[in-house]
Image (cartoon, rainbow, N blue to C red):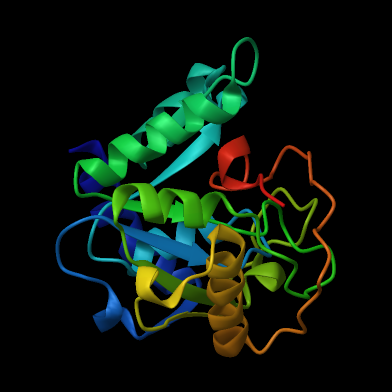
Length: 228
């Protein structure tokens, strides 16, 4: 309930401060499990994506966000799942948390690049997104966000208001078993769809991990960024 109360309260404020425009939201299935796979240029990506989605969006976020009561309530209220990355297999714990969301028919937000783009280009995707999609039989909706790096550049603590933000969604993707291929091939197909929407220059290498304070939820969970 806190998620929806906070969303209802923040939506008019955010729309007043930022010129937010959404396209293609009709591609999002009305019910059932679905993965939103987005490009990633700013911490605030994880604010604007849920803002334009009528369903609840959940991200797996690093546990450090929940260490202070001053911030923990907010991250829980907006649907983040804390992930402790010490002891045992952090990858498997995050996978289990993400699977639980999808198996419950929910919407999971993922940044396949695994970190914010340092230069505005679209980097190679990690295969965790394909692994989850296949395990949970969930369609993947590619998403391109525009203008978020101008609102909150890497390293900036306070968003800059009165800038235009666009969120564009593409047609849902499903892996076709009859077509062969593997997780790597499916991930490349997802990234190609994101690139077609965003128009970003594609990079064949992985982006270096951004370990700053404002790495967005959805880019911190190891299973969502691992893979060859």
